[in-house]
Image 1: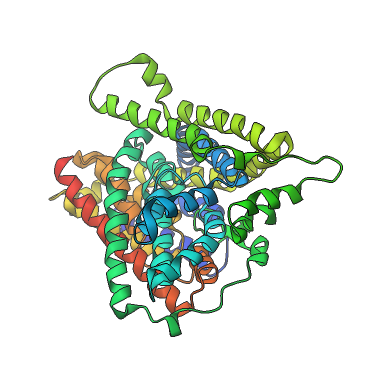
Image 2: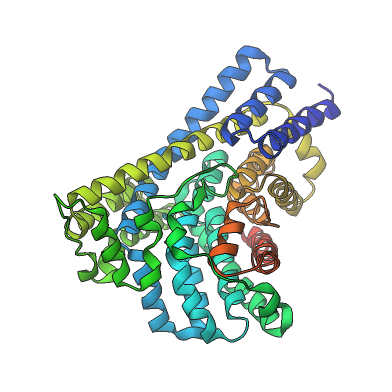
Length: 487
């Protein structure tokens, strides 16, 4: 096929996917599948070749990411049920004080708390953030809202076990341990620098409490909140109201809330408040340490059979699930434990489908001649593909409103370039995640949750969410470009 026709086929398919999702409200899974089929047929793979390539891409992606997504969702559901996040925020406030707590909470949200859904995290922690805000001065609400937006969205896109990062790694064939290590290298400076920049701007007059703040949504309505799968525009119900309303009355509220969930005939004691916070998080932290250790040994080319097994992300997070479940069995009882696991499996369903179909799209694009074509245009420098994938992901995000979907699609398009240039795929993945953070706006469910639960007007949310996360997107791109010098 002629060069221009390949670009036209891919361009038309991507525009069609965007229109299906945004204009006609088609589920992203179906829209991506149609886009993949259209590219396959239009690029000359033929009917049989298109079907086989899609199936192969779906299967390979799920083999890489399926179990990790399942284990991560289950750990997050269990921690949420035990009220662990609320207690953590209290502990961080006590340890770091008002001025340091935005950075402490932000880095926690962006790293090891990525097993918990973003929207659930907002509902749980927002009441605590509102109590902290007045202690940060006139711009306190803006600072806390910016911290929420930057840390949660950055973690989704760049940090394993964030769903976006896992999907990107699966699309590009990046070892998950490597994605976690280099994601951590990018996430920590990105979150810290971005919060610092926005804090200075907000305190310098960018934040106007009279115009940028409004009455906070009633916490009693938290159970009616809708949350989306990893920022996609298609929403699914949040976990039951008992989980969503935990944060409104301090640490004791989690115990009271879950006590009401138990039936009168079969009361379930809640002893999670009796456990030290480190015990609740210990299984997850151990799992992440095992993954990091295995990745470091792999980079150093040191073979330790036991660590190769235990440090495998699927095994490490499985151990994390088992450990968290054992803690939960003692803390909240068998009934609540089973309920949390059921919710986790329900939440994982659409994520599985979206991940697999995204892999099918990436496989279709890789099977064509687009990789060779892009290599010819952008092969002069390693910086050019990184910038290009950032731009593609940014444009897709502005149109679609989904961090995960835009990052995964952009990574799939540019994956052949990475392989041909010898450029480390992790750089392409991190650039895609960074670009997908640009300009989060009114098409994002997270935008509206932060606007409602953090007491912001729409004008205020545009400052904290749209501008704040866009700053993080640019900072992350800079960090990725610096990292590319050493990889």
